[in-house]
Image (cartoon, rainbow, N blue to C red; front, side):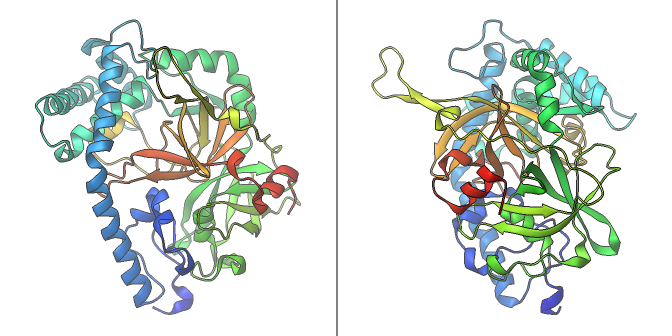
Length: 434
């Protein structure tokens, strides 16, 4: 294949740039889990194969930590009423209540009429019991089956960290199982504000092979005509992603567009890449929209206070302070299908529709924060917002220590805007001007 056509690939992302060939690539789930793609030359092919091999080795090394955390989360949900905070819950959740929550969720969101909610819920509960039994028995947790892994995450999704859909541009209520009772209160009291800011979050698409539309990520509004996303999302829209970042140009054949509403009647063409961070650790890009025909949604506010992410606290008898993260939610447009088994019906179809995923900041690491909101493939570029001011504190980038087999990561990471310091991106985000 010729070099000029190398940037056209079956996935939503292109090969990482030569200048950025380091561990920062592993922050993004989709850059590791690419299906077969065309590469620019034999060295790109060799390099990307090496990336895959290294990702597999990393995932095997992190399996025990990652799965142990998932087991611990599910055990907490099932044993203490679904509270994921250290204070714990008050009402234990039994198998019947879990099954009822799963059945309700599947019945409400199943795309097809052939789903048997009761049978699927029973399968999920059975797989969870098997996984928990293995953990108690001292088995190698890295040998959990795909079904057991997916079922553990289904419990977390349905009873603790939902990915809420929107109907008529309004976020829907979660079921009332476990920790979801807390999020139901959030939606009831702050739903109007969540709906307001969500209107300024859109999806970005491009034309793929046979002129088919491909969703490549999420964007959110700043300034008069600007949107923010990840650099690795912008890489899927340019002529040659292997060129130095400052020289990136949009590929006109891909005709990138942004849409903010569920009906997708109004679309804004992406005019150019106004700024793209060249630093390997700053996964951020800012694009300019063509707004000559219609006015875009209003820009989002950004919260620059470090304390809005969380703070170190010390409890009685604790020698060392521990980090206590703030409550946040992620708004984005996941578009990847979660498997094809019956268990996938728990998650529904990630078709690019807007989702709201509440959770907590769990850690800070350099310019990035970790969070436990439920994000699916395609959430790259999503904004992380506080539940108090409904202002942006982070730019979701992907997962870390990703499992090659399942696509699950140890944690979700987002660029912490308050940690950018005097980076050039800070001035652009503050002023809305490039």
